Length: 337
Image (cartoon, rainbow, N blue to C red; front, side, top):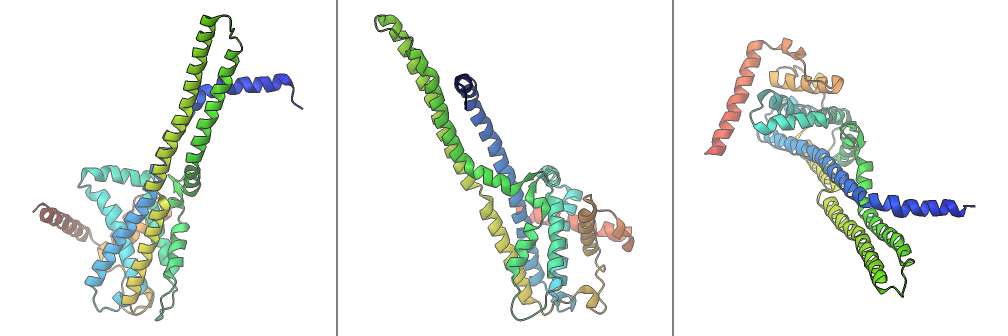
């Protein structure tokens, strides 16, 4: 089936060409895998970051909750707080840029589609809860939360290109591949060194010693691939365990679910804004701008436009920005003291 020449050529390729590039290839793959592991972890942790910020604003909302009809609606409360969270985290930060890290974080959030992903998360969540019937028993928020996060295309791919789940699966099997590659490289080195023993002549003691020394040197170098394979395998296993995205994702799902359950228990209905008499969802400029920011990010993937500004005067906008700046300054002064 295979000729002797083809088999010999394949063996020569393994021992002469592949063995030379195997060790650099292992180090290169480990470097790329480490970078991908950090990118996957960063993408997932930004979901958890948004969820934690939403959790904080829900608690602030419950602490200052009034007896207005709109504040008793689960949908309206979710809508106000989700859009407020998005607006304060992305739009206000991009406008203020009060800290040096804000410039870097704002850029990375756009490159990795974190901002667009959070906007889609807000819209998808509101779509899922819009028609829930308010009853004493809680809805299955765990299923709603999983659907919202699983269907978010921005968080399923790194920079919208590399699939997160497939990358995670490949990175998990790399430690075993590194060990096998190291052992394979050792056998290739031994295979390449063995023919040298055929040139050894027992009557030539000096020549035999030189050949044996070269053979032992080749064997020692061949063993290095196994050592490197074990080292990078241990390092990769450590990184996979320390930066496991599944644990972070599970924590995100549980926290978002608990936040929704907490808000559901504090509300009395799930009435939509258009069904609440006298309710104007654009009465507050900040709420209006927050909704506009989410809409524009989802629809066009660009920075929010000023469509909604026509509903509020420029003086109101200036006053709101001044209030936000004063609040941030007060927070910094309190932290400094």
